[in-house]
Amino acid sequence: MKFFVDTAELDAIAELNDLGMIDGVTTNPSLIKKSGRDILEVTKEICDMVDGPVSAEVVALKAEDMIAEGRKLAEIAENIAVKVPLTWDGLKACKVLTEEGKMVNVTLCFSANQALLAAKAGATFISPFIGRLDDLNIDGLDLIADIREIYDNYGFETNILAASIRTANHMSDCAKIGADVATAPPAVIKAMANHVLTDKGLDQFVADAKAANIKIV
Ligand code: G3P
Image (cartoon, rainbow, N blue to C red; front, side):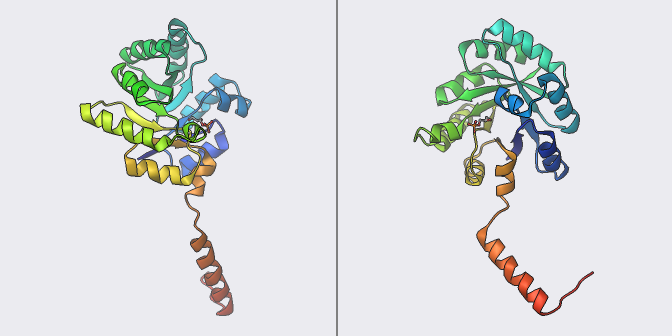
C-alpha cells in the first residue's frame, strides 16, 4: 500500500519524504487554508520536493470551471493530480481532464455507487472518506472493502485512495483490505511507530545499560 501524506505543511512533508515514507501528497482547500499559503505557490513547492502524485483541489462547482481550474493546477508540475468533488459536474470534469492525460483524484466519496461512477469516468484515484463515516457511526472501512470488491470484480484500474484517516489502526486496516493508497496526516503516520511495549522494553534496556555501564561510542 502506498502512503500519501495529507497536509500542505512543507516541513512535515520534507521530514517524511526524506525518510522515504511517502509516495505522494494530498491537499484540499481546508489544508491550504491551514497552511496560510497561496495554493499555486505552496503546491509548486510540494511538487518540487516530492516525486509522486500531489493532489491539488479545484474550488469551482460547475464542470467547465473545474476544468479550467484543473488545467491551471496541472500546469504547476507533471505530478499534479487534479482533485475534483464527487458530484455530477465533478464527474464530467474528471472525464475531460482524464482524456487530456491528467491524473484526477475524485474526492468526497461516501458510497460504493459514487466510487463506481468515478471509475466509469476514468478517475486515477477515488478518495473514500473513512473518518467522516465513522463520525456518523457508519463503518468507513466497510466502504473501502466494498469498493475493493467491486473494482476487482470488473478490473477497474482506478486506485482506491483511503482518506479521512484518523488513527494508526485505520492504516493497517486499509492495508489488510487492499486499499491501493492511504493518505493520512503526518501525526497519524508517525503514530504508527508507537507501541506501549516498545516503550516499556526500551525503559528496561536503558536502565540495564546504565547499570552495566555499557558504552558503544
Ligand atoms: O483526505 C481528506 C481528508 O483531508 C479529510 O480528513 O479528517 O478532515 O475528515 P478529515
